[in-house]
Image (tube, rainbow over all chains, first blue to last red; front, side, top):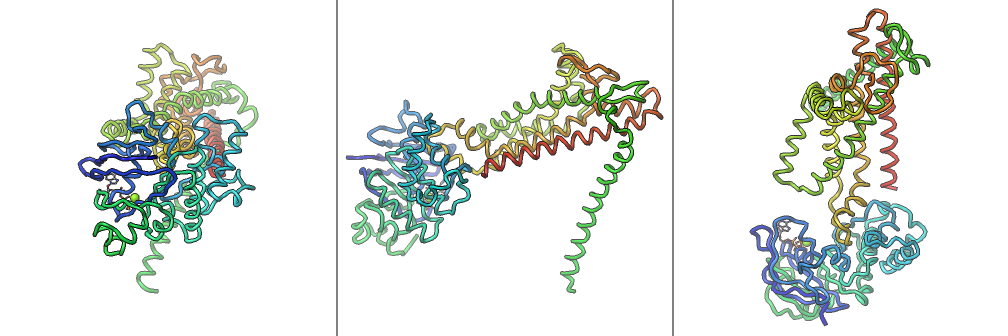
Amino acid sequence: MIQAEAKNVNFYYGDFHALKNISMTFEPSTVTALIGPSGCGKSTFLRLFNRMNELIGNTKLEGSVTVDGKDIYARDVQVDEIRKRIGMVFQKPNPFPKSIYENVAYGLRVNGTNKKSVLDEVVENSLKKAALWEEVKDNLRKSAMALSGGQQQRLCIARALAVEPHLLLMDEPASALDPISTSKVEDLIFELKQQYTIIIVTHNLQQAGRISDYTGFFYLGSLIEHDKTQKMFLNPADERTQSYITGRFG
Amino acid sequence: MTRKQLSQRIAFSTFTLISLVVVAILFVILGFIIVRGASVISWEFITGKPEEGMTKGGILPAIVGTGCLIVGSMIFAFPVGVLSGIYMNEYLGQNRLRRFINFMTNNLAGVPSIVFGLFGMALFVNYLGFGDSIIAGSMTLGLLSLPVIIRTTEEALKSVDDSLRTGSLALGATKLQTIRRVVLPVAFPNIITGLILSIGRVSGETAPILFTVAAYFLPNLPQSMYDQVMALPYHLYVLATSGTNMEESRPMAYGTAFVLIVLVLLVNLLANLLRKTLSKRVKM
Ligand SMILES: Nc1ncnc2c1ncn2[C@@H]1O[C@H](COP(=O)(O)OP(=O)(O)OP(=O)(O)O)[C@@H](O)[C@H]1O
Ligand SMILES: [Mg+2]
């Protein structure tokens, strides 16, 4: 079974060919890590799956991207409908300057759910899933801006989970965090994988090794290798993967 | 003391001195008007009508008139200006059209206010047939304050972090929802600044109301938006330059100036208070 798939994808920023003929599939309830040197196209690739690249002008996409068997770039598809089903967590925590409660409830509210009992339940469940509930349950009306960076990032994860996404995209979600917050987020990803399909960009190879089932290595806009994480790290098929993993470049 | 420290100290003292001078000048102006004006201020002055060739009585009609013009011009200019600012910053992107509109707004901001007065007379008073009236004066003053409101709205929106917009869109919010629920609440306290600046300007302008609404002497309060009114700045001008008995109306002129300044101050305080509460609500 396939949850998400990119097929023969080429992506251009103006004349710049940022993604070169990439095909990749993602199975349900797995974590896939995308690794590769800076500027190789990991974030660009990730953003294909919730059509966030469209916010940048003058870009072009070839090939197809499907989620749950549906072409998300098909003409009859509403882009906000797509984004509801696909959660994203960014590198820098970006909570809204609202209360903790309103941050988590945001995704539901914009979809027209305003019933208090529903919201209360979703807020609690999402915060629990994001391992933040115990820390904030007495202060749900407090501003999200008053949380620490690590708490903010877990809040952003809770916020993404609240709309029950099928797919969770994470772009270096722990890179701005201290080691303790990082390990909390990593534990969390491990937990979440039971229910969600996760694609995560990371520069931290140990992290990729710890949390992912599959790893894809990008280099200069191409997908060089995509395999089980263990296999990739112990016995990579491509020489370039080998050099990157052993730290010879990047 | 080394030379570097010395030059530091000289620079610092110079800056301090200059700012002190500026503040001092401000205080002298205010003090002058307070000293001259305060003696005429009385309950009767604020609530009465001008009498005996404007040498006695009060200035209520002018206060009410200026109040009407402030409210009227903002009812017209604030929504239009804020919506234009939103359109330009959130929908236009950085393209040629935006640069062109920016160029035109900047030019509009530089047009002398008497030109607005003439334009207002031609369009609102004559062509649209409003006659000399609150509505014609308000719209003229509104046009005058549009550039400031548009510009401050744009700046306020620009300073909203883009990661908030992407965060909202990624949750499936539409662009409109993103603007309404995330961008505007963050930007609004700063947008209020534009409102404050405009109100200050609108309440003090004489030229734009000269041919569109201002009455030389009209003791009766306005009954509808098609009436003429007296206004504080114009009344001041009349008292200072063309009263029937200039010597005797001079104290009245200072009193009027005093009221005008207090009015602007009050509006600023109120708007600042509003801005503080709003930004507190955003930060919580
Ligand atoms: N908005 C943009 N406009 C033009 N070029 C872009 C834009 N965003 C990215 N690029 C280019 O596309 C390439 C891939 O960028 P991308 O951000 O996907 O890399 P990345 O692998 O995520 O890098 P990093 O590890 O540094 O985050 C880079 O060469 C970058 O310069
Ligand atoms: Mg990146």
